[in-house]
Length: 321
Image 1 (tube, rainbow, N blue to C red):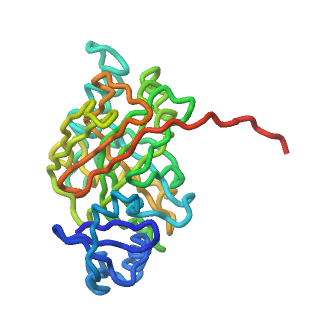
Image 2 (cartoon, one colour; image 1 turned 60 degrees about the horizontal axis):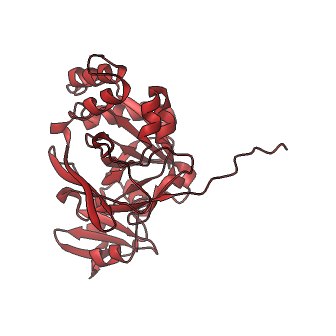
């Protein structure tokens, strides 16, 4: 089951190829709250509400009518976070950015730790992954809209990932709503200058959707990432995800994020990105304003498309009160 959020209110449920409005549902966030309150799954709640008129989901997307599948009404109560070096092809690119092929960099060390201890058995605790903070809900860009790169940025590059959406219940219990495609947009040139600039490189917007996969994630996921320039293909590469292609289990990554009490505050929404193994930056591609990123996978339905834009410089002068 896949869910999409209409910008003007309304939730769309797609089963196989048929997309229909969910009766009496304004937002996926509201549905998730109701499901928690009533002690049922999203699928059970939607079955109870029933489905209405069929819709042209692709047409709505083309018209710019779909939003990020889940939004908190207060962006300050959304955390955008992620983990890196989690995929079996991810270490070589990062290692090349922060050392030479003869060095065992910190990136390679933490990757090896994940390979050896990132999928613990039930009842055991695995090694913690690399972790980063990306921003609040103010940084969420709807699918189909442009990703704005700050005027001071040295690079604006795509990162094709899977993101998990989580809602914290009144008792602090973590509830997974579902998964989407994500473009974890980053500044790779800034990161390459020094590994300690990773935090700066991640403070950028991101985009998710347009469809939310509800339920368990397949262990093997295939996708494709590409960049278009002036309507023609500039770059493209297939990618793999899912636990079969990762050095960490999702359970381990979730544990090491939500073990912090700060991240179990009732009502908060968490969007956690699980890493990538494919970057155009690794192939010496430098995206330009107007280029279009597209991330697709049959697992998630419609592709995630965003153009690259560049913001005007901001006045960062601090006033004294």
